Image 1 (spheres, rainbow, N blue to C red):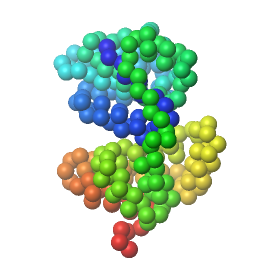
Image 2: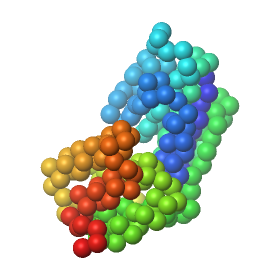
Image 3: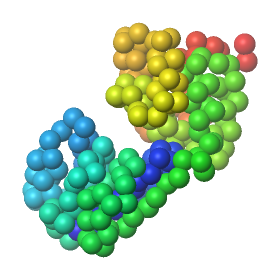
Image 4: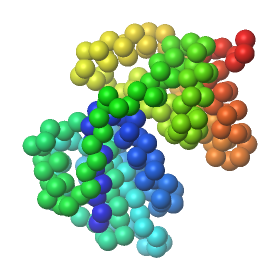
Length: 223
């Protein structure tokens, strides 16, 4: 089993790298587990029970991994890649120490190098017209699918428990004041529909993300 651990405060870099890794595997051979809402037993079951009908390499993506996870105590078949998207565990944590002993590939992402996406995300959630300008700057550098990934990150950031950082906690609370629970449901649905239409060829990336930005901001581009 091959193990890759993405960690650090750089959420943009982690998501971008995870997306690149996922593209190497068929969606049918990819499983995603969020340990914030699922027991560790689910991961163990996925590792121990490969499908008899899958002959290609498999990918298991695990998010919100506890720092106490011991990677030396889990195992999988040789055709499996385990991708762990961690937060910011300390160097002496069981997760990182066991990753090194397991010969895992460790990739650290620093937050200060990842400023590109946040002007767009902040403008989008704050319903500013400048969102359109920031959107196309972001797409020209990273592309539409990456931009969609960051929109999902934005939605999760405002729905999951608040981070420990005082700055980010205050920022998120301020942004959330503008939205009702139903608003979040509608935006998630709209984002999912946009992704489906882009990947199905029903919309171009430019048109789909312009349209999605209109839904977030309530502003029509060019008006």
